Image (cartoon, rainbow, N blue to C red; front, side, top):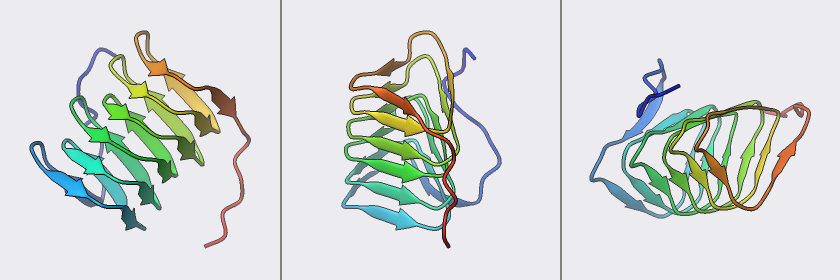
Length: 119
């Protein structure tokens, strides 16, 4: 997985490069991030953080594809895919993890069976 971007079909919110959001983002859709979010992200579906993308806060989502940076803690209900440039400064709790050489998790990893979500 020598790629800088995850180009995956998604339906949701796109934050472009050179765009910064100050505040928390909560959505029942997916989030595709090339820019920066200064706050927590709660997404009901997929979060994609490409190289150069950054979340300065916590992330809670169903699936995560990351090749950028998250400074907070991360909770993923299903699958996490970390590219070679991915950095999670906090801890990661996920059901399934696919990790590429070079990716970093600073404060720990916990693999946890998928929880049934009440919606």
